[in-house]
Every structure is written in C-alpha cells, then in structure tokens.
Image 1 (spheres, helix red, strand yellow):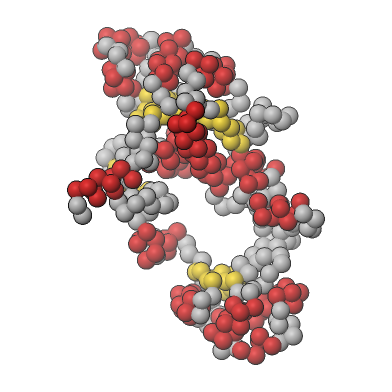
Image 2 (cartoon, one colour; image 1 turned 90 degrees about the vertical axis):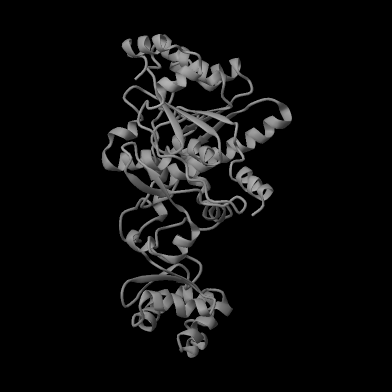
Length: 403
C-alpha cells in the first residue's frame, strides 16, 4: 500500500478525530453512545462521580458493562455536587463539542449542567440526553431501564411461547440500540453544525427506541392488522419462516416461505412431493397447517447435524442458521474472519477480548480502542492539560472534589 493510501485508510478509520466529547453517562446507553464516537476517533472524557459509574458496583456483569462500553475513554472522577467540581466540569465542557448524559430524570438539571444551561453558555455544543420515557409525557420523571421499555413498548408481549408468560429479550437490546441511535443523532447534528454553526439539543428515549425496533410489526397493527401475540418461533403470516428445527446435535432456524424457496427446500431434502401436498402447496396453507409442517421439518432434518443442515440448505440458497452457544460463536469461521473481536488490556494489564465496530470504514484495520479506564484514572493528567497546577490538584483531592 502506498503512503498516500495508508494515510487515506487511517483518515477513513478516524473520521471524528478532533471532536471532543464529555460523557456523563452510566451503565450502557449513554456510555455506549460515547464509545461509538470514540471508536470513530473522537476524544472522550468520562466524568464519573467519586464512587464511579454505577455499573462498577453491580457485580461481574457490571464489570463487563464497563469493559464493553467505555474503551478508548479517559476518566476523571469529580464531586459535581460541589462548586469546585462543577467549575471543573464547566471548564471541560467549554472545550468540548458533545455532551452525553443518561442520568436519572432531573439529575443534570439539579447540578446546573442540563442542556438548557450548557447550550445557553455554549451554543455550539451538541447535547444528547437519553431517558427512559422521554421528557414530554407523564412518565418523564420515572427511572427507566431496558426491561421497563421492553415491557411498555409491547416487545415482551410478542416475545415467548403462546402458552407461557411474556419474556424479555435475552440481552439488554433496548439499551444497546439507544446507544447506537444516540450516536447516529450526534453524527447528524455534527454534520448540521458544519452548515449552521450551531449545536443542537437531542433526546433519545428507551421507550421510543423499543417501539422503533418493532417498526414493521407496529406498522402492520396500525394499518388494521390483528393484535400481535406470542407464538414462540416462526412468523405469524409466513411458513416456514424463522422456524426452529431440531437436528442431530442441536437446532437450526430456517425460512423458505417464498414459493420458489419452498420448492428448492423440498428438492434439497429429497421430498419434492411436499411442494404439491395440498397442506403445503401455498404459503397460506402452510401457515394453516404449521403444526404438521413442523413435524415434517423435524422428520426430514433430525438425522443431520446442524452444520450438515447449513451446508445442504445453503447450497440451495435457503436461509438457514445453526443455533450456536456463545462458545460455538467464538469458533465460527465467519465471526473470526470479520475481525469484530478485538484485544484490549485491562487496568491491571491482563488481556481481554471485546467487540469492535460492527462495520468497516475503508480498507484499514478495525479500530481497537484502549481498554476501559479505572475510575478517575486520568483525572490529574486532564486537569494539568486544562491548566491546573500540582498544588491545585492536591488541594482538590484533599477536599474530596477529585478522586
């Protein structure tokens, strides 16, 4: 690769170089939005309370949250309830482009660091708030976690088996999606600022994010469709679609509801007569006779391993996937080839693996930001950069303003 091409690749991988971000967030949604910007080259300062991000205190999974959503950041721990702590925060904000927060409702306003106050002083700042239920409705003051948004958006009502209680999605998918949507909104606002010279006040709510994730189902219902219900695996209006099929050593999922796909499926498994069977001759009939169809699928594929099913059906351009445990995902040739697994080093120097950007920019290597910092790890260094003397820093620590 030529030196010019190399420079171009590095530039493509860090399009936000020079952008400065203040992350006031906790747990996943706020920190995740900030880390998305860090992975694109932004400088992110994580401002934590003296006790640290609350995720640092909720056991092993909380430690994983910190590792997953705070790589590439610098941490300073401040007592923002003190005037001296707020003065430091204001000095940091004065040099930034973006502020992100997802604290409990009203918390940043009580500190005098809400979007109205910040943008009144610094109109070029882009200020993102992520809340549970948005700022306009009667639930604006309610604390909102991922699970509450899953429940109140209808997502849990359509997840699980028909004869069983509602189920949550197995991971905090709404928190993670809110982080990505927040980063998307910030990128749009940064682009808009290039034209207008003005920042923007942005808001993302977990409730709206959860609704957004169900857009097609909601559009069907809003258009007069029936109330969606839990059906477990499968899709309500197509078959076979997202069907879970037992194999010799596990399970696969497959979809072959388009008529040409169904015929190819029947050919692949050596049961071409099924395409003419009145119960299965059309998608509508396959939906009506879904229980019988599932019995046929199990009969036809239960003698194959999951990998053999994937190989066979893929050859015939049928959508199929092996249901993999996490340990199996790590050995997937596709996952390995993607390069999404990146290496980092924890605070104590021990290595750990994490997930990098889920997309590529140009042909350069996938960014691998530094490990998540310890609480307050960069506080003294940051204050020196902002003009504080060693005496000032010592005094702030003595006063318990700075960790």
